Length: 256
Image 1 (cartoon, helix red, strand yellow):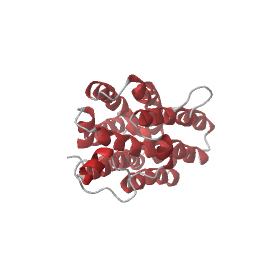
Image 2 (tube, one colour):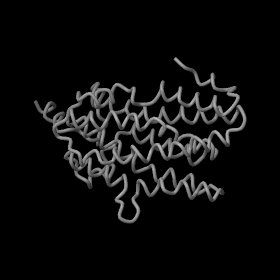
Image 3 (cartoon, rainbow, N blue to C red):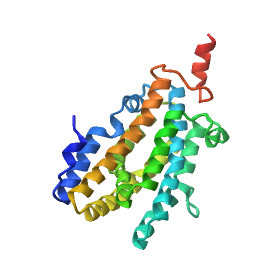
Image 4 (cartoon, rainbow, N blue to C red):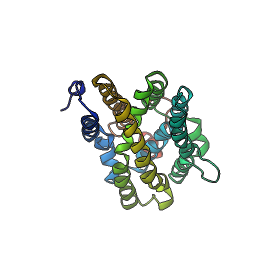
């Protein structure tokens, strides 16, 4: 078990990078029980629907947090680099963007697009976690805001697990439905490389290196908390809050 305090006296950029990779190895959400279920083919269709629906809220807020970062960034070169993140998700020109690809995933899972976009069925725990992330990027230092994106260092690993896990284990998942994840296999490493080099260059004191580690730690908590909410409501039977999405299979069980 690692403690955040161990990163208070990092001496240089190399130690910072090693610390960040250690945090990801110990705390990234690919380790969550719900993801183990999802990738291992042990989720019901309704549970996969609940995951996709709630994850949409996160996807929809990524361009908003990136716009918040850019709105207070005086460094033109950083803005020029960062803006493609918004294009990646919102789309630009003929590229439909990641949010659209996620909506295609939801539709193919049997969810109504209008219902997904309305956000009416999202769990409160999902909203609290994601909204906290947007506030973090808006209110913390620019260095911390950039550092909070560093979970992308570990995203290719989870997508590499997820693509075959979904295609091989669920007969209702098609190649078209995993288009979002395939695109992120190239986008995430590009973004992570830039953010990592930025943090290594600008975190030039032990105090700043600690803040970078704390930002990544926080972001891991955000991702983990979203899965906690899903696991509690749709796997452990902890109760689905009124007004939130209820899979057809759970409606049938309740009626029986």
